[in-house]
Image 1 (spheres, rainbow, N blue to C red):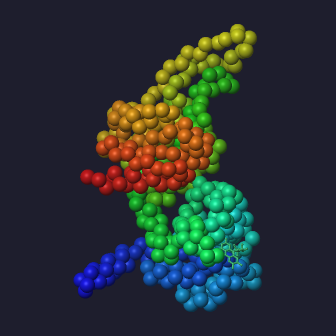
Image 2: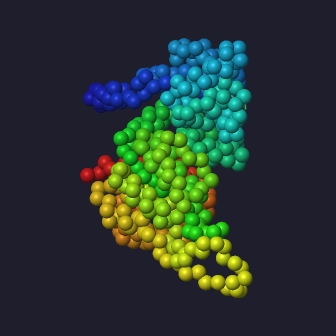
Image 3: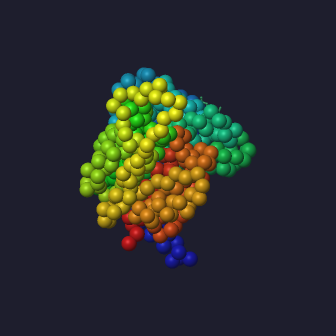
Length: 417
Ligand SMILES: Cc1cc2nc3c(=O)[nH]c(=O)nc-3n(C[C@H](O)[C@H](O)[C@H](O)COP(=O)(O)O)c2cc1C
């Protein structure tokens, strides 16, 4: 008995000594949910792990718990939804101070407002101004949680890089059982720690990511291309940057905003993508080839426009484009090489073949015929296959979540002897 208790104390002490929350500034948004009382425990646990906590409450939240409770636990003045104390300045100073913005509990209302860019109180204004990671712990009745409007808002926020913890399935305040219960404070604080350790786990590493389609010119006004939007590659770039890697993003034409803080190159054709990748390759520790590079390009590119009076049928002669991945596979040495494989049938077999043929470390197999997967959607259904043949399959996830899984797998491979 005594020895097992002793061991437990040792483990707790070890965890505290190794807490990466020491001196981190955490904004804690508290909104008008019945779970607001649990924020007291969240503050206590964050402070136990040596973080500094700055509580911000919405007007509705003050109906559930008096601000004095949070003020005492955080040893900080609670920022309230009020114009009386120079709100304009405060939302900027708070957002620039934050290492992380945690909203726990987050109501359906606040999730909807953030998803729509509404900033009508101090909490939502601070979220808009905040450039640090935002972690949301939803709490609501299960019927609110499954509402498609709420689900769309969550999906949108996840694809923009907002992190979510919970909600859990369990007994709700109404007495009903369902999904909507806020995660336990200890789970939330563990997730906060995970975000900070993520931030570190690729520090000092440089990764090259390719994204989007290529365009193969036919004539002055036409090109051959594919349906890739670049969303998967851009999500990988965002996630890698968040985890501390230096990111070089080489992108074909997309309508996406260039993620801040990455070294960015815009290319058009497969040939241009190859030149740019080969030029940057010596600088990097790994490459993730998420671009949908055209396999063929017209043999002859017309200078002007191909006239339609050339006849009822015209014949295009195509030639193979350079195989960038295969080339990297030949020269990679100890660099990590990740490829994608989009197929409509025999996915695992084709992916394993490509992995071996191109000397990859990891392949992301993507069944583009399953609903919610592949090009031009925000979600993906993938399996990760490594060179030992280990296959990890995932259900439908947002592309941002898939990016998280790919980086996790790269970390796991890096740590293997
Ligand atoms: C007793 C009570 C409990 C509530 N609990 C929740 C809840 O858990 N989750 C939620 O989304 N809304 C809940 N609401 C509704 C919110 O308080 C309401 O939508 C409010 O406008 C939220 O404001 P805020 O998002 O600015 O804090 C509750 C309302 C009441 C009266």
